Length: 435
Image (cartoon, rainbow, N blue to C red):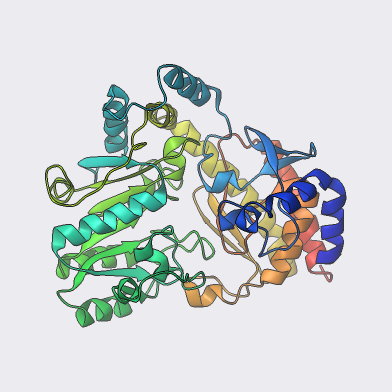
């Protein structure tokens, strides 16, 4: 079965989504409010969702899917967890936003700092992009330097300073001067990072890194790599920023910094921290955070930063994630899924890489393990598109991208995993006709 036949099958089952996709494209550019939601990489029309509960989502045609998109990360507990919903409802009844401090902000700050020992002070914002943008400005203000070093193929949101890192998603409209102060280096290559820092000696404010790269195939750091990055930042007196917007809480209770035992100077958050409510945060060493206004001279503000509804949801998420059984479930389900798929892949010697960190994973159509952005260019996007649409037609929802991380939630049952394994193997047999 080819891509065209899969698309025909999808269209027959999702007529309402097709109609809505055509209409919305006349009002919203590309028919989406974020390009990640588009199906431009895999083809076909987007699917409009109307309900989400636990491990399942339902579209406007009534089709139910086992969901591995996870809202691009936030649904770590599953969708619409009743205790999180209740906390948010109670908060909104008292007022959705005040523009003044609340005790919920205090409680949320204590909760995050308890989970992440590297953080002495924190500020809440409304998205991961905003968190990264603010952390980079803070690092520049603190060090009085301009250059930021990032890793090729990483994704840090859509603020001007970091668009240079997504070399496969470059953007017009970014000032040349901004691009010139963004320097790229390969992931998992300490020698080139050291050369970059030497070349720009005295100019680098920060090195920002996704400890696990979620937008080029769930690329894990090689042993010793993150520790080496930490040492080089210390040597060159550079602020080390961990972008844990995706990994924070997902790969371990204390994020990637706990998993890999590396202490950053600043950390950025989003996604799972709010359990579905729009949230971002950045925090770290007290001396750096003290550079923020009104104490220091680095400006950052936001009307909806720390709003009570988001804080209430986040507090409940962190309370629930205090239970180690949640992480045992996440790890267990992810391991079961990969073991089931790996048996078939290995038996048939398929050019598939199974890459995972905690509850983040990717099924990569590539003949070699993906360790950096150069490797990711070998991923077979056409085969992935056939695979994606076959699964979609059979009730499995993956990210519509051959490189972006999929996510497991604590709500995924053993039966969900078993069904997914069956359907993934069936889809792979169609993609690789000889299997």
